[in-house]
Length: 431
Ligand code: GLU
Image (cartoon, rainbow, N blue to C red):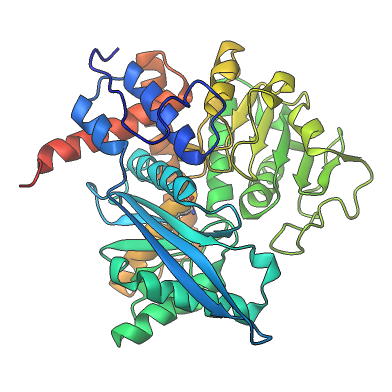
């Protein structure tokens, strides 16, 4: 136990005990909890509870019908002590300063858990991308890139896809940035299509890491993968890729869902037959024989529950009916701080997002290396390196879990915070 825990001076101080309302509340509550259980310098914890920089921009856009809208965009740069800022760009109506700060903090921990030479960032535009045409999305992306151009760059801050954005969005970011710089700079952004410097295996990487970590966690708890039942909430890139791999490896996926509800079969679904959100949006229940609600899915008596949709779905209220033996977080921040404590009290282990879905940023790192070296890797090499990096991170977190006798989330924080503390100490404080 650290004797010098810190009161964090943040606008949301005091909300920790109540239901976390924003990812910032949740991230700060987690950091504060970790600081109670792990010995980390008071200064470092305080430094990490504040982002380095918060950029807020107005993004004007002309619609196809000639009308105009003003959107608000953000780029939060949380910490760069271990390397350039790194993290996704999200297009979603709920994008806000608070959400971007929380998500940027999680990126700092995620990169440190994976031992990548990156810090943490996140950003986005408060817009519902479903209401925009393809050409409107392109104009919005180019203008947003221009608004944040001064603060991003291959050695400064490297964006990537997140909710509501995809490889095409990243190609536009790369093009808009490169056009202004006067040269093609693929390393400014990751998650691009391979034809313009993207990495093979990047799109499927977050789902692959969720599957790898689920496999390792089941093994740790001595549940054979071949007899494990799995429910996946959210069928975007993360949920669908995780479900399909786990099915390939012999597990039984009994439920998968999107916003309309869940397809359910207690004898097992074929996740390859169900279109992911990227293939056909919101079509999970289209051909399903049995449809249940998302809340029903959270309450299924399965071996593993994978929340892979949005943040804050496991709350003090919804965890009441969780019956799964193990939770593996596919989304960023799906479990609120009070829910986390309730799950701990009930002995339901939660493998945290900052480890489980870290395959995305890990393959982003491979992509960045490929861009800088102007040499691409085969899918085979990406898959091999990801497997080995995920196992290394799993081992580090497992060791912390056993050594400190803490939850998996605190164990992942222990690994990340120790690395961040060492970097802060080595660099010192300027001036
Ligand atoms: N948006 C992804 C995440 O939340 C990936 C970020 C990246 O590749 O930089 O981890």
